[in-house]
Length: 138
Image 1 (cartoon, rainbow, N blue to C red):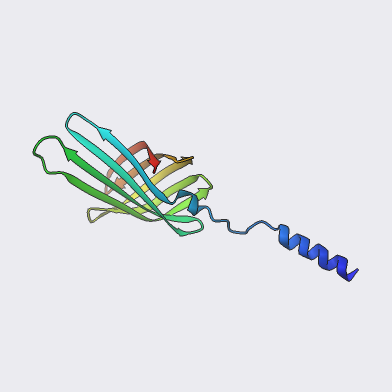
Image 2 (cartoon, rainbow, N blue to C red):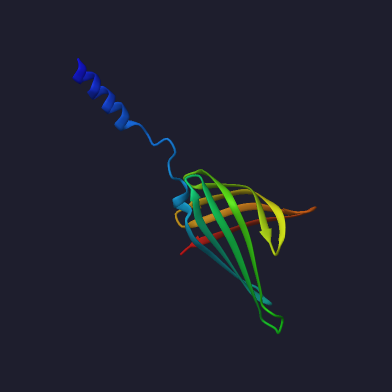
């Protein structure tokens, strides 16, 4: 009887699912998107790194290369605590910093394979900007 109880206890413990699975690692990497207009080429790079099992840090870098003599621009937006909701979904409700200014980023992103589709709203003071794009991991 004692052996049976120990066997049963061992079976239950070994079959137990991980209490806090690592969802963040699936998002780690660099994602790219390049957009060409008549006046410029804009390259967007998302750099995602793991903070813990359910959170990632994201730096969004946007490089604009103008066709004329206008100086090129580079902007970097950072978010230090983005929540990983599911194996393939990010939930944004994070403060961000861009050029020394702080704002709030809300929305979602969905990862399918190496493609990250996002619908986000960046709000700084009383101004909001909605952005919906796709970036690809390389």
